[in-house]
Image 1 (cartoon, one colour):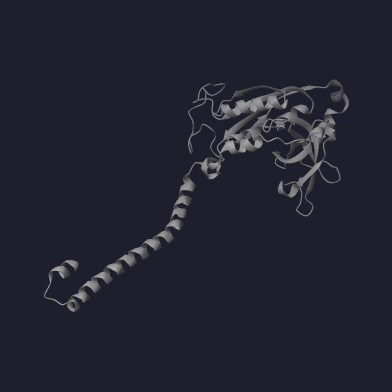
Image 2 (image 1 turned 135 degrees about the vertical axis):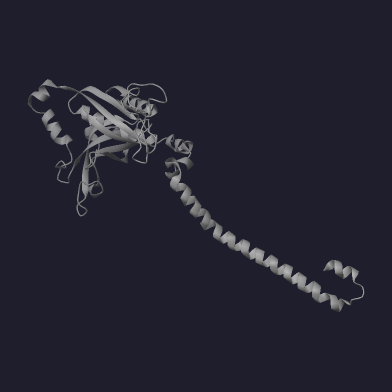
Length: 305
């Protein structure tokens, strides 16, 4: 329309203006519609992107779903290296109704943490959350029984293995340690101080809970044969966990005597002992689940011999 306006000298401005105005209005309307569509798309796009993100997370590696992929371990190390002054962290470890180790942490004066286990304070936890007490009377008392150096925090921090008791001081029905101590402290057992060596076999699992380490998802590995005491990335799956666990045991002061890969991919074992009396079982309870979580894995104990 502007080109026609510049060359049509015979028409008056009054005759030409409607053509120009109408075209300009149409152009403006198209631009307004385009902007409106773009704005609507911008409003809808975030929810669509969120939906797409949800779909991606459903099939993403488990490490991303747990959030570890966005966590810089150097940030945690910065805080873990801070001086705690005259206090230490004491991780109280106890066994729940399923015979699984759990723990909670408290602050103790450094001087008290370096003393005898009998000087450490008792503590409590909610037994209704562990299958060991009803909701209307849920308090469980944890009583320190053994102390170990903490290989995860280092320094003067400690791990404390505890018995579980009701508020009246009676061992819980799930506390199999207490009656074992009675037997170890009675008659000839106490006099002769028998030695025990325990072997614990376990299998490492991915966090999906169904795929052992070294197994294809939904499938099976190659036949057994090369895995027992094997070496190599295609045979000894999870060696890093075994090595970390072994070193943590030595640092903590446990009497760990050996370890090896077992007959199935992702299966390992370690040995505790020889140790006198209940100490063998106490030491066997410690460390393994915590070492696994460091590598974002789960473990299932197979048997103890």
